[in-house]
Length: 582
Image (cartoon, rainbow, N blue to C red; front, side):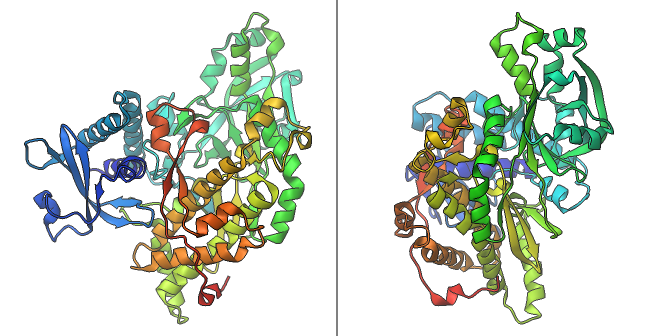
């Protein structure tokens, strides 16, 4: 089984176990008895897991090399199946995917989702393409960490699926292969330009092309633009002209469509009509508006929270722009007009401003390398050896590292939620951290465009700078806000960081969760003792977003629901855990 197949199955099993098998009580952890002989061998390390499925495959079994506190797994063997009336047999990757999809169809009383199966296979094929490519070159720490997310979201069934782009174009612009490429540029009539917030596009044009007045477009989007009747009419009127790929190259970051150049003071978040994970990644006009509007609206709040919590910063999105060609082709439909406007939509996010050189996107740390080793565990192991020379034990160093990370990330995020009604999305891929002397000293949270507001704190009269459509897109109920933040912060981010950090140190994971519980207990009063957080510390379940069900039922990402997880995060106050070098 190739590395791409192993990780594809690992992702699918993570989702399937969490969203289906565990809630339906179909899993035998530490399984014994009826098992394939290959899994009974002492030569194969790890825990044996058996899932009870249904006709025609009655059981599926496999080994896991590691299992986390929230039942996230590291797959350690092939999958074996026991069909009705037959002995155990090895499942090929395709047969395993088929068997799991068929079982989910049975549980949900639906037909097997062939579209999802195609997306899973597309993701697998893309992983293999990335593996076959050359190693990601090193420009600087930020570029390298952004282009090191080889396997993607561990709880998404098709994290590297990219529909709407051809394989050769895929490789030219994918961060996983260290891509750097020229943007396509258009010479435009200045009257077409629509800017929100601080004017930026001319400076970007000057830095990247050496001249102002040009407008960029992502290579994956340019054919859609050139095929537009509206564009063609505007071109005939000499209002816009395609100049082709020009200027300095830019580097795609982990989100694929957000682009980096070290000489710019902004990232470019471009529009692409390509499905990445759950969404077509286009920039609607109201998203441009909400990004800039939220930056202006929340500036005093962010400054206040950042002052109270040094080392925590929200990256602003101060500018956005698009082209308005509405009047160039009067026979065009509203849909055609909107599509072209979206194709040209760009959100500008501020660059990281820091003196620190050791920078990591958190998702690239909580990940496996090509050899199956945890990136974070390897890094902490090496640093723990250095710390041992000063008398610090490995376990204590790892716990100290995690505590520093918790203290940077958690109080600021929860202060914004409970004191200010601001709902961030601090998942692994939206979190960037800097370290100094081996320990985390700074975190940045990004994706302000996706930030939500709770109406009790932010009624309509406080949002006068936003349109009704933008307000509808940013308003979240308190319950929605808590579910989103607790999922992104605790399940997607911190649980995975703990899982990876504690890979090679038995018993350490529980201690790490206790440290986190202590921190939450200590800030509970400062946050106003919110009921949701109090309940969590008393053992109420954690919300985990259902990425698999979202794709299975073909739902929009905004309509995703949750599975509720038991967890080790119970009220725990130990004075000894409060001491830290951070």
